[in-house]
Length: 436
Image (cartoon, rainbow, N blue to C red; front, side, top):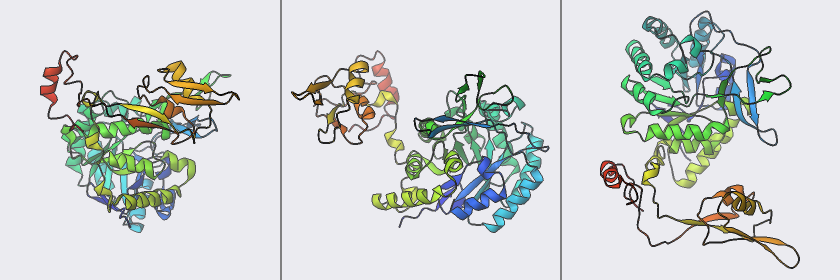
């Protein structure tokens, strides 16, 4: 059986599935229930100064799919609204009772070294395994000079990280905001400041939907609303990209990453790990389905690892990173075309409509004498864009088949149509992937 145990920046856990700093980790009652369900660790909901924050009501909204499935979740909740004393006492009690689980404490304070120097010894005294610096909260706290207001300024990230390394012996994990142009910049700053790891992504600025009768967005507070933090499965592609950007950045190479963003099952977790994450953090899926979802996550990941021959999580951590590159290194002579399996085709015509109206008119609609429709790919017109495969409701009915073009590997840095081809090829030769 696969071994799911991990060691992340010196922190050991029985599995890579941690609960993120959020409402599910706001108190001992929830955290104990999570550990009983099998979670490998938690990041305690963000602590701050006393007096504690005051939250508003209501706080959550959602972006729904066709069948009212929640595909995106929005919140305007702040950091903990319980006192520092109560939180620290509960953290100490939980850690004593569950010594084998990872327990990280999330922190957010103003950019004053004395405040950080005062709180860090108190957190260490609880026996916690590490601290996570919340530089990502996108609502409420930035107006107070914290959260994303820090995470969006690399100089602040480096400065506060260095303070925490100076005043604490615990591993320091820096949680990054996605509300920035280039996530590598704050990651590099955290690395320069001495961070032991980074975690990402925090939530994305969002407004999910409006009440068009009252002309106010959700969640509604009185007669007004505001942007909140977006999370859930719809945010996963953004998170995966940002994790990959840091994992393959030469300036942060080797920096451990805790992946966050839309993780709801074992496959999501495996994808984050393959792109460089050493642990994964979950919030929205647990809020929607409860803590028991970790059972399927652990079982699914273990079975998949057994099938693939991976004995430990570390054996496939970052395995997809070498295959993730810049567009300019992609093979411009590689070609695929669509193939429709007529035995699986249900004749819905979605592929034909999509291709005919919005793509390359490379699918023919055939009608026999009885009026029955069938669809055939016009290979000479197909550019291999994948649109038909994406719109097809039958998984595996349309596949993309590689073609033997006989053309050599050619990327943009070597293309004579690129006016900078020679310079680009020389400057980037060391970064280009091997030709296949």
